[in-house]
Image 1 (cartoon, rainbow, N blue to C red):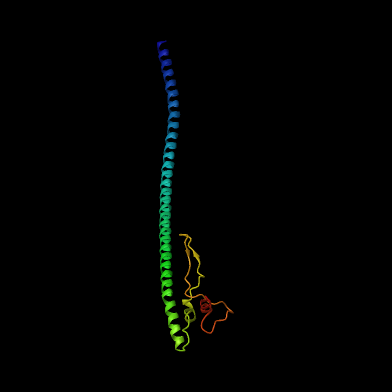
Image 2: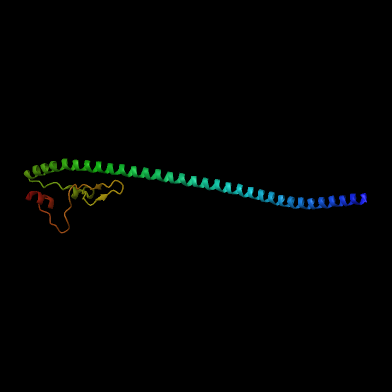
Length: 176
């Protein structure tokens, strides 16, 4: 009987070993599945981080592109302001030169008249370019300033007769 108990005891131990081995195999299979999931998730995480790096690089490229566009806009605004300032200086210089020219021409015309000579042609009659009418009214988009082109001599409208002594402008000046 002692042998039977010993055999029963061994059978019980074998049964327990078998149950524990099956349990261990199940846990081992779950562990293997968890490791595979872990490796898969690590790969995904690595891909996500690479994609994030690419997106950040793209974002920085766009930020740099926007910065360059803003820099170009600032340069253009400054260029426009400088051009408007240059234009204003040129217009003022043209106005001063015209103011110098006008009395000198009137004096020369008066001297010519005393000698019986005809008056010299007005600037606008000599060259179209010298007749700067106030047709160049510009409002600067950037500075908000009003720019007016100077009028070296206003043109006479169509159908307006000139006097024998000069232009319509001369008639108006003689009347005043």
